[in-house]
Image (cartoon, rainbow, N blue to C red; front, side):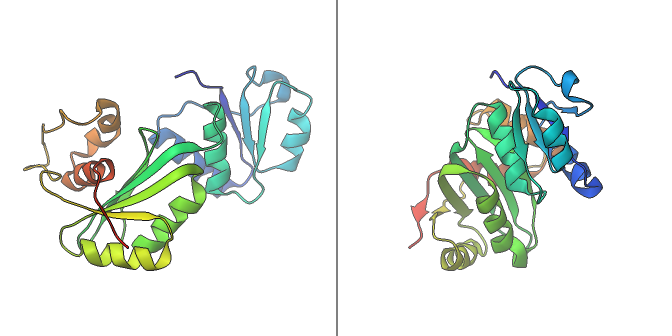
Length: 215
């Protein structure tokens, strides 16, 4: 995929560290802002600092995303801009239920976020992703295993989007070092591979499998 170069010019230190962490986890190439004349041609500049906006405005080829609130949505809009998009066609969120659920967020075939979340924070985490990631279509899929229906029902009360319960048959591999990946996109698995994690694998399969709508 052809991408515009991404340049980061974040003034707030804690947000800068988080931005870099997100980009590295997503394997998105970036450079850090130096001066306007050094910006790559037709790059996307993501910044939270008004002075950087003024400096870079002399370059008509640069797309500037100004995010003074240091928001995940602003960062996502910048990442989308590098792909010549304003939103994902579809964002699918898979939840492997249990006492400590695992969440995988997929946007147009790419893993955006993944990780464990405490049971009492599932709804808040899902709401955060949905409000932060621009998308034409959004769907949340929950495995039908232990407490899956309970999680789906709670989400249904809070979120007015399509929520599905998914059959978990063969979503969880028999071991952490599973080789049962032939039916999945190898590119998706690249990010999960280092974790050798059954829960991550299951959440990924759930996100990609059509289920029964929860009304």
